[in-house]
Structures are given as structure tokens and as C-alpha cells.
Image (cartoon, rainbow, N blue to C red; front, top):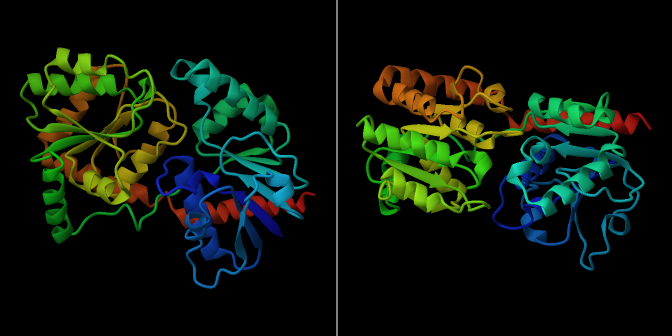
Amino acid sequence: MHIAINCRAFSKKEFTGIGRYASSLVGSLSQIDPDNRYSLYTTRGWGQVRRRVCREGSRNFRVCFDWLKRGVPKTLRSVDVYHAPGPEVTPDVAARIVVTVHDLIYKTYPQGHTDETLALTEAQFRSFVGRAAKLICSSRSTLDDLQKYFPEARGKACTIYQGVDKGVFYPLSGEERRAAQGTLVRAGLEGPFLLFVGTIEPRKNLNGLLEAYAQLKGKKLFAGKLAVVGMAGWKTEGLAESIERLGIKGDVVFLGFVTTDRLRELYNLAEVFVFPSFYEGFGYPIVEAFSCGAAVVTSNVSSCPELAGDAALIVNPGDSGEIAGAVATLLNDLEIRNAFREKALARAREFDNLKTARETLSVYKEVYNSK
């Protein structure tokens, strides 16, 4: 079987979301499948893509670099299965097509997108939903959304949870924690802090978290800072004014995009990781935080409670008082906080990259044998 995977999503040095998923999938497939032939399509970053084939002797994997940008059909020939790890306008390839659907945010939370983005995403979905032999959804929540908005997906969609790289996200040793503390002090995080990770946009509900944080500060329930990790998205106007109005200007530390090493340190050292998002197809930060043994507060909507199970405190993201109350519960009781840290580590074992790769390989075999 000849399998092609579009790897443009992780062809740059820095990537998140779909790139992280695709990168982990390729690396894991190279560990478990020595039998099938893989072509890794990209129009850039040959070396970055090649590094993901980490198992020595993985000669059944090769990078197909589209130097002239002729497109997938002309670059990939005699392919049996073509996997798009995220939505794209389906190329006209003579292969069985598999597409991973991470979310339907553009349908469920359209106010979080520009009209241009909504039109582009709709064109992508219309292109692949009908043509795909199999649609892999990142969560049951995403599967339900897909079948709601695209009934034609019924019967050919399935759920495969995405994994977390335990070699990147793990509990730090005592020595590593001490080194990390020094690093974070230099970044402006001296003492205890709460942590938020996500693109700064309305859907992620940073405003709700800021209000909850201000309540904690106002009631003298927490004296530490709030660390915000993530790149600015859109509709962030008024954020500075909100921070000024809430009286927390000197208490919120915006770190922007950080390396995975720094992110691991932050998850480990945060008193509580707070992720009150209004919608997630698959909340990567939840499982990353779990894998580091963090105490987590997250939303009761979309995929968040599905991923969290009983390993986090679940709140209504539209109620800042409820968010503050859950955080206070973890802050005020070390025994409860430690119990949730243990639950987090146990829950993280459910999200395994090799398991994701094995289930995805089964999909490839299924569609190949259905020809």
C-alpha cells in the first residue's frame, strides 16, 4: 500500500494545532509500520519534515518536495491512500482520500471568524466531505458536529483521539523544576501563577478568565500572577482596556508563543491550568497539561468535558464566578489539588501517539481494501 500524507502543516520550525497532530502521526507511523510505502508531501521545509521520520532505518518513508509547486496530483503518482491531516480543497488524485476533521468551529462559533475565513472553510468542507472515503474526527463532539452539519458524512466518519507526546510533556524531576523556576523568574513569573494557553481570540474566553482572576485577587484568594501563552488572533481590541478596568494590569504576563520546552515548564509549575474555552474540537492544551500532572479547570462545552473525564473541575465558561470558584477550590486545598494532579496523569495515558497511529493505520487499510 502506498500512502501519501500532506505534511505542509509542520514544514516550518514553529507549528501548533494541525501541525502538531500531523507531525506526531508521521513520527509514530514510522515507528509502527515498516511494511507500507509513505510519501510525505510538502512544498517547503524538506529537512523539517524529514526529521519527523525518527526511527532509524525507516526507508519506507520519503519526502516528496514539490519544488515547482505543481500540486499534489502531479507530484504524487500511483498513490493508494491520500491523507489530508486537516481540511483542504481536495486534490484530484486517483486515490482513496482520508481527511482528519479537527473541529467545526466555523459552523458552531461563526462569530469567531471573518467572512473570508468562513467562505474558505466552507469551500474546503464541501470539497472533501463528499469525496473522502473516510473522515477521522478528533473527538466524539466533533463527530456529532460533522454529522449534524453534513449528514452525508454519516457512515464514513469515525473518532480517533489525538495523542500527546510524552517525551515532550511530562512531570519534571526535582532538579528540572528548580532550573525551570529560575527560567520563569526571568520571564516575570516569580512566585505562584495561574496558566492559560491558547490563541488570543474571543472563542478562547480569555476575557472570562480575566474577570475570574480579578475576582480571586479582589477577594484575596490568590496573590500570584496570571500567565497567558499564545499568539494574538483577532478581535483582541479592548483587551488592554479590560485589564485596566479590572485593576490587574501589573498581574497579567503575556508570554506570546513559547517553545515546547518552556510550555512544559509552565504546565508543571502552574498552580492551576485554566482553560475556559467556549468551543474546542480537540483541546490539545488539556491533554498536554494532564501529561505534565497539572491541576486543570476547563469548560463544560464541546470536547472539553469529553477529554477531561473526571480529571479536571468542569465549569460553565460563561460564568466568571463559577470559574473563580473552581480555581479557588484547587488553590485552597492542597489535598484536592494533588488528587487532581494524580487523576490528570492517569487520564493522560488515554491519549497516546502510538495508539493514534495504529488506529489511523487501520483506517488506511480499511479504505484500501474497500476499493
